[in-house]
Length: 545
Ligand code: HAS
Image 1 (spheres, rainbow, N blue to C red):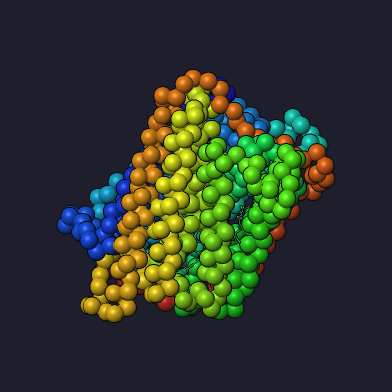
Image 2: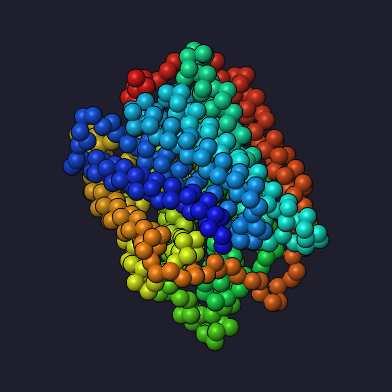
């Protein structure tokens, strides 16, 4: 890999690790405050910290890591030209400037609007302009990635595209279509409103457009982890990819069903017809299918590899897995976490059960299992080989051992914290609130022990973050020089050849758009027609002063 290329990919990843440290620190403050045993100094506002935590980890760490990783995958599989690389830098700088603008606004206390930032909360215009820049920067990356694949295809007529490049382009297609919703609400609603050009805002429209983007956002996080599970983990365990066609099909299904499902975040919301909520719940259950296909494929890969190595018996093949290799262990624990994490998602999506958990801290527990464990542990697993590969160093035995300790800290901390969040949520504990005994209420008294457990789990996790940042610095600057492998698996010999129709991009995009139009046209029309024209700025308890 050329130095110039490596520098581009690494810049995105460095940004992500800085975000990890800042966001993690804010997370620690939150669990401490919620435990009731710690008060923030009067000049720090709880909701500003919660906003930094959500924005920096949920939006910045993820987006920067993903785009850096995806660029590295594209560079490796289809190549990158000088011009594409320069555009990659443009994407980086536009996103970085946008992030810094938004971060300064939040730290100045002018954007305590949480990472979902929908109305009626209002932030300073610089926050929205910053976010718009992040989106525009990411679009540049989309176009570069698509162009990279197009150039490759031109040079290789009639050949199927490399699997990882195909996956990156699907993820970017989904991202592009999804971000149109958030771009619309930011440009047409929030910026004019925050600048005082319009006196009111259609709250329901802003929330609906946000969730049109907000749900595919979670799959934008998940799919790079799936790229590693499908195409990289098999190589690390000494096996092969179970089926190229199955992997492609599952990504296509994600493209179809990730977007027309946002209403499952708004099931309790008045002003939306329940028929459409129900339809989107059904579509939500469709988006579960590609995850089940992935689980099947991973089991198949593990079992086939184990049996080929001669491990028999019902579960004997489990023994062959390289448990002491952190490049495998961290993502594997991510997979395990996705079993309860995904099951929780099914509960959330079930129309009736949603009313039990909505706006409780159960939801926070759900996404700490899914994004903060499944996705983040897989990203850590990727970092152990990608960073030394980019910096011309190697993952030594001692760093590997430290990585295993880090993984254990993460697993233990997250199990305690997320488990306690799930239970407290079922007992009615609200999400997004600082500590209160609710006037001595009996129900609130039941939550105390779980809040303490979250503080304990959160503290263990913070140690995990410090360890990870230390490992990152070691891998980037101090590990011995060498060549770390970029592991990409080949397909099993006896797999059926991948049919070419799986690359029918026009058809996939057309079906995606048709599904979106079906699921969203009438709800959006209703929201514009029937919702009250606006609502006053919401000043309490989260002020916009
Ligand atoms: Fe979710 C809320 C439904 C997946 C993230 N979700 C959230 C929020 C976030 C989030 C951030 O329907 C909060 C948003 C906010 O701030 O308000 N979610 C689902 C469903 C799925 C799902 C149906 N969510 C995710 C993923 C996320 C994520 C992935 C991030 C990466 N979620 C919801 C709903 C809400 C929600 C409602 C709104 C709640 C409310 O009312 O506010 C599905 O995609 C899940 C399908 C997954 C599975 C698991 C498959 C298992 C696999 C692992 C295999 C393991 C192996 C190893 C092979 C069915 C693939 C095994 C080896 C052995 C040896 C055992």
